[in-house]
Amino acid sequence: EQAKGAVARGVSSGNLIAFGSPSSAKIADLAVAAFTGVEADSFKGVRVLFIGQAADSERVKAAVTPSSAEYVFVEAK
Image (cartoon, rainbow, N blue to C red):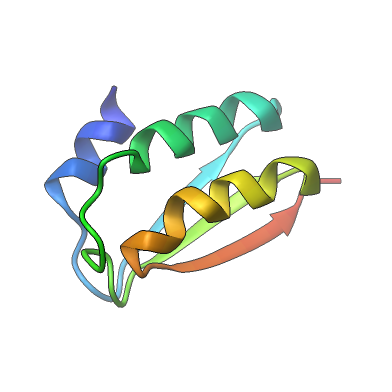
């Protein structure tokens, strides 16, 4: 709920939002839920970092992309 609330309030250009957890699937679910319903192009200039497994990256990227945020993926080893 905190992540969804923070995303709903918006993030200023030049900032970073990071999602990472030992459970890649759970943090991916949280990231997708947080970006559900976000207005198109409302995150221009913001970076969204997802640290998890490659298998979860594409669905997070698909949720983030409409916001125009720069999506960055780092595979957790």
